Length: 157
Image: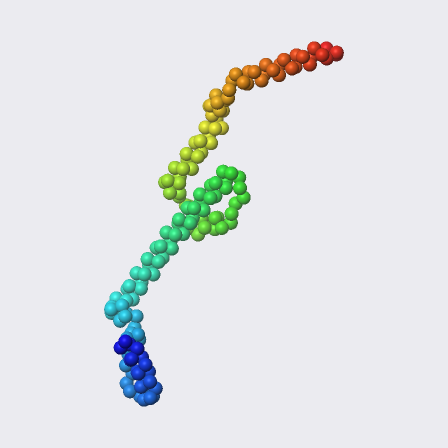
């Protein structure tokens, strides 16, 4: 309420007097340091700390982006997909040598081990064991019987 009265009456009084009276600093016209309740030196140091913290956060963010880009690059190589320029740029911004977090590296290692098992002879044998040998034997026997019948019908042989 007092603010409203001051703004309404104060503004009109200033216009009426032409601003001849000594200029008073209003509450909204304090310097940033005074508004924070600090001295000028404390405020400058505070601003420096804010800038340093922002730079650290930006560096960590760039590192995480580069780690994700490395992971995407790995999967693009694995599945033979086209490379992405932005991923390469993100990796180079951090310095080019990006290590994946331990959890992600462990996931990739497990994927590689599973792929190697599937590609190996033992992996092929395990997939063969899942087949129904009786039905396979029956199909092979039926095919042989068909071949024998067609060979008996053949006049050339």
